[in-house]
Length: 428
Image (cartoon, rainbow, N blue to C red; front, top):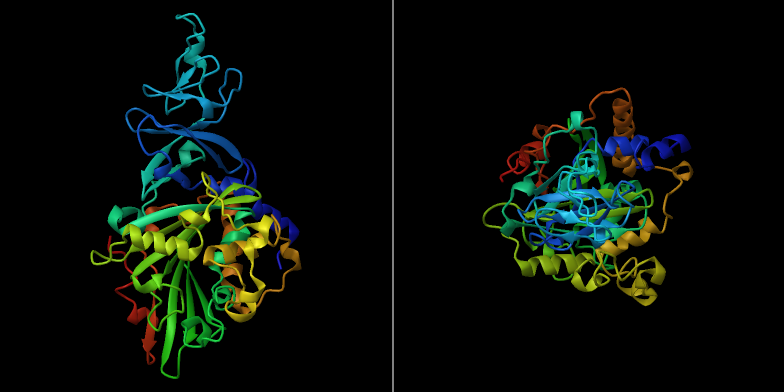
């Protein structure tokens, strides 16, 4: 269990809150590049770490992320005109560039000194891996931009998506870092004991602390001479990387999207204390493994977050808490463990079903929860480091730019460190 006071320190993400100040020391995804598809396109609302913002791509392609409200009379800049390298408020015409400078004030005299003094909150941005990232912390502590392998891969070999989850980021992230639940929540073929996760439903979990967070090793017994080993990475403060080539024995998934060798992962980005934007990415492992648009559609639909799974015009699932995720009790009895369609949707049903913020003081953790315990310890230690004026772990991209997750079956007693030595190093 976790003390109530520690739980509070971990879950509150607003400015000035312990976890909020920690999150602001890292570059965070703000939106997908596809949401600002061209120069001078319509602005987009962004809510991030309890702050309301607006994003826009200006005439020169630069990206602004600014306060959602004009500093004149607090009109909503979402309705603004994106034109001539700035976002213009439609209430009185005040215009701001990507740096937050007021560049025009047409309802005031041309020589007004106000323009030189009025500035809107603006956060720095950078575009990598199909994601627009922002840094919301103290400028003096701004780290180097993100440099993960998947952000360096060509567009032909990588894609991303995102979905809104209606619960606190921590319980969503803990669900992703939990490996044993896959044998139950994601058992979509009842009675099929030939799948890797059904052969051994109690994987051995090992956690190795690193400079960027930790490396998490899940080992399942296949038979007397073989074992299935999956290497995850937890990268501070909110990213998971995992190997995803698990069709080696047939993983029992419809349409088998695992047949393409790749890595994938998630970033659980707090919208506010009770809502999370989950960014999902997939990356082909080498030149011979491009990820086609057809593969993307198949993968996302298998996960339950394909184009037809979302409420039009949003990143919210059609199957949600309001309709009990369209659970089918007959299918639950005869075909799948949950009766809910889609890996992503199954996770959301369980994580959102805990309520917006779970009471961790009532938990009873077991040996399968090593990664969860390690996550909380690292986060609390990092929060204390920031409070002492020190740097939290994982800020330097050199600590994680060359890491790669992997999974495979190992025959005999060969250590996974030796068997996977080459595969655990980034190639892009």
